[in-house]
Image (tube, rainbow, N blue to C red):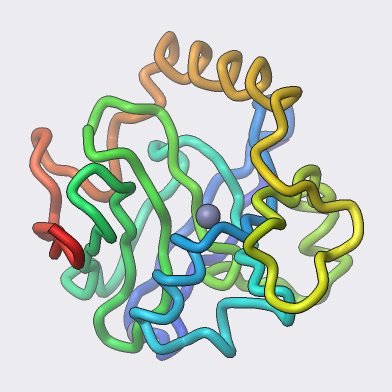
Length: 193
Ligand SMILES: [Zn+2]
Ligand SMILES: [Zn+2]
């Protein structure tokens, strides 16, 4: 059964929904990498986005499962470097939205859990499942969170490959919330060209 999660930026101008398909692969993860921390710093929202270890909570899913119903003109994009991920955010209040590749034809989006509305932590966990990976803990602030690993776990690669293969077969990159006819809905600003 599919579940619908309400999406809303911090100020409420951007609204949408995320479909969580219970029988499809998706990953509830935490990323401690310096790029995710730098993105939070760029948005000047470290206190709202990062936990005390500097971790960003993400849900890796397919672009076609994300849809915006209101305020899509607020969608903006930065890249930390030319080759980096596209990091989407709401320009009205600097809410993080999601990370994607630079192509409209890749079935991958890491959506920020901060954009999701849940009644409780219990509802969040029953919808998204538990956090299954805490990666790049070598960049953790202070101590490392329990159950984290220093880099990206090799054991995760086959899962990602299966996820991508299913995504390509099912064309789960279309419709894409951040691209129209292959063009980004907002041109990315490159911070360190
Ligand atoms: Zn907003
Ligand atoms: Zn990261």
